[in-house]
Image 1 (cartoon, rainbow, N blue to C red):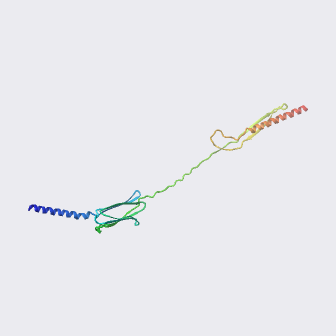
Image 2: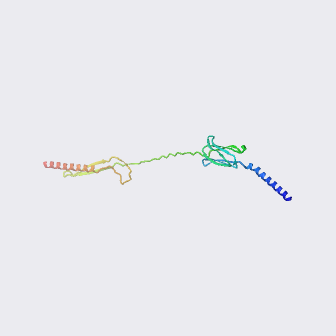
Image 3: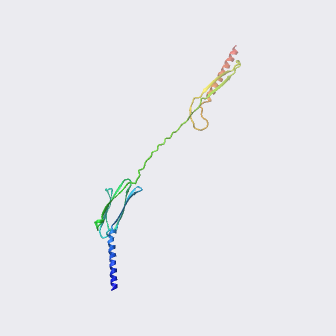
Length: 213
């Protein structure tokens, strides 16, 4: 008799615990988790749905900026998805879930993410290079040639002076050896020969005059 009472009490306790557990299950079921962020120039959305009905058909729909459909499908006990877009502008994700077993677990949630891309600034730099060119001018060169002609009848020598001036020629600095002055030695030599010939002719004329006298 006592064992029967004990068994009845144990059965009642087990039934109460089971009822408590089953009563708590709906409270922890249908767990959605949505996370949206923008990092390193990319906006992302992660969706995780757990403890949904295995026997009923559930449905999820995900859209971006009210224009692009990212997901639209049925699922059973759970669902997990991740979506991304460029982070240069503000993004708006809309997640709509329909629970097949109970409408109270259906929901529609909007996730708005601000842009995380910083515009880059382009700087233009202008460089000016100045090249200086130096030209050297050669000073005029003066050459003096003196020719002496001596005759037997004249005691005073005849002196002829010739001055030659070289033209001024701009010469670029090449850095090789001596600069070219532009003066030529041929001109003084020709003048000297002419003067010597004239002196010889004059000597012959004077001798003929002396012979005639």
